[in-house]
Image (cartoon, rainbow, N blue to C red; front, side):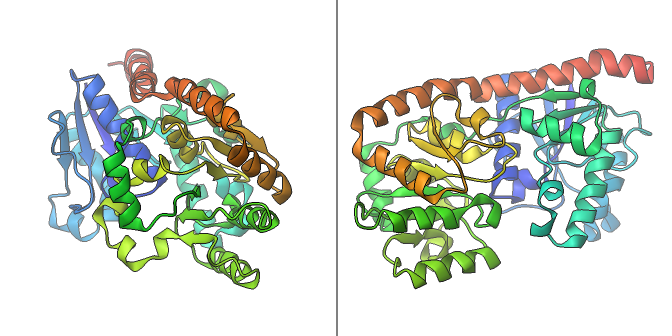
Length: 394
């Protein structure tokens, strides 16, 4: 097959949607080498590339008008390129497919990560909610099949957008295979010095926004101040909510206990930080991943931690029990005391930590890149064999 992808985020996005896109494309291309993969990219990237993947081909807009208006090319005009490339199937990797792709008789599948803008519209600009709603609804309606990255997302698609259940396939995502490789002691020491990491620390990774609940982690650390003096390393950026967290940290005199790693100018300039190349070495030096989010589409830092043999404390709501299985400690995200007690347990109980590391590694094997790529390839094969014949008569 000749499979086309909306690869904008694969080339340019350094957070969740980018990680998903890159991991899936690479996993497909290396596991199913008999196919050719065409990566539709709006403009050249200096951050990520696929030059080492022989059967992956970057496609950039050639027409002058398309280069001047790359968003329009990506959202509509790209269908002409797909036709010229004789693409057998198109995959919108992040909630969108091009307008008019069905008229071109190119079968399509779209990955829907979450509908958080529907659950928490107040945390977004009104215009963004309207844009997301329009694009997401269009994709769900016009794609031949919809991939949901969790059972939670599947439920939301049915509830909010009334997507027919028989049109949805749940395909869990994986994470960068680098997290499953043990970083040697020498490299860990280099990374520790590079980022000035403390000897012991808890870890939070994710955007610093209200839904992800960093403030309650800080409150938990404050409640533990007389028992533990273990800092929290924060990897992630934010705006308004970030300032709320910083104000709390300052008011409570916790400046030494909360380390905003992404705020350090020298850190932000490092290529190995921007591409997350150093993240496995950071994860594998932490005591635990603290991720008590109120709601997620999946919760990729949980999976990265499990592959890293890092204990996880996460929420008992949303899809997070899907991500953590029997390997994590689950807490009420609204309860800072409960979060703190779980952190204390991990700090004090070596037997528990050893059990969590082993259980985490075992559970993570359900989400290997090969297994996740195979589940997506099954969707492609189903679409090509059944939907194309029935709907287009090919």
